Figure (cartoon, rainbow, N blue to C red):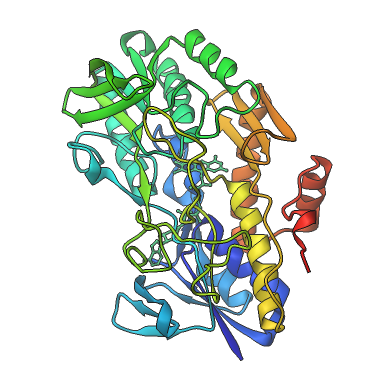
Amino acid sequence: MKRIAVLGAGLGGTIMAYELRDRLGREVEIHLLSKGATYSFVPSNPWVAVGWRGREEIEVDLRPACAKRNITLHSQGAARVHPAENRVEMLDGTALDYDYLVIATGPDLAFDEIEGFGPHHHTQSVCHIDHALAAKQAFDKLVANPGPVVIGAVQGASCFGPAYEFAFILDKALRDAKIRDRVPMTFVTSEPYIGHLGLDGVGDTKGLLESAMRSKHIKWVTNARVNRFEGDKVVAEEINEDGSIKATHEIPSVYTMMLPAFRGVEAVRGIEGLTNPRGFILVDKHQQNPTFKNIFSVGVCVAIPPMGKTPVPVGVPKTGFMIESMVTATAHNIANLVAGEEANAQGTWNAVCLADFGDGGIAFVAQPQLPPRNVNWSSQGKWVHAAKIGFEKYFLYKVKLGKSEPFYEKLALQALGIDKLKAVSFDT
Ligand code: FAD
């Protein structure tokens, strides 16, 4: 019996294991390798950071769903992947051999690249539930003792949506606490313009987000390269097109939350042929590693080149729907390999995103992800906040029940004209 291991039980890895089980039935062993037995819905972390959600509302115990779906859960965490030996070494000294491996480890957060950065130093984070819970404590202190705040994303970041979301969510939470008038807010970003999002904008995200920031009294600095974070300020350089320094800003801040740059996790970093210099997994259009053909990768850990030169480096975001499309293509391709055929499915990699503002929000669809596009749409309204809650509830329900994609979800996606697999991708 063939053995498939999925490394990482986050947004991509969990549904990867379920979708493989749907497609391959009982003829293969499926092993899900996680750190702990809990799934945590990362997109809700900004709500956790202002107390709108608690840990228990956004976490799911993976054991019952895995047992039901005949998926073996290994919760001790992986120490190292050994691709030449088809083996994953675990943190407790045990090892698991595999025939096929899907790497879905998400990002390692590169806080150490900037002085004073990260939840152990001078800034808050919403990238992990534990960080978001710590950020909630800092938020309570801010409410008790109001002062200026800085929100944003640093050089090399690729995940800009949550930075905007958190700025607007914080604005709403501070208005609810009736202290917004005592909290000057500055958005500091490596993007060349507001609403670039690592995608050179989608529809009119520039206009929509600039207007939303103006109406909420949030100032901004773009093309920013942060030098260091101190206890009471952020020191950042604003960079010109030619790379020279336009201005150095020392922005007072008693509460700072900036998205870090991502890189690959330690278990895979620095493996010749498997990863790029930042530790992201190299894949071809079929999500398959070109060197180790029995290894696939989905999610934030996949290597995607930046979309063009910008004065300060920015990466391309990997959003939930895009990750789901990688998962669907990978399940199809592994099933093909198990049947003795070639990988031939390709995910659409469309960017579909809901950015919640706490009482409204902005939605965008970029199809394909890089311009020029067939669909380049953005819109705003109160419905986005409701849709984001729907996404959260629905995704958690899916993970809890061990489902990858029930029928009505498929229907909704087709109604939007968005499919997970490229029709042209079946090149056999
Ligand atoms: P993750 O969900 O991070 O999962 C990776 C998993 O791998 C984790 O469980 C981790 O513990 C595990 N792992 C890592 N190393 C090991 C190891 N050595 N051994 C075992 N397990 C390991 N996208 C959207 O579409 N909509 C949103 O609203 C949205 N909001 C976001 C908000 C935030 C704050 C962030 C950071 C991202 C957001 N994203 C959003 C982007 C993206 O959808 C999420 O980051 C998503 O969680 C990525 O899925 P993933 O599977 O790649 O990684």
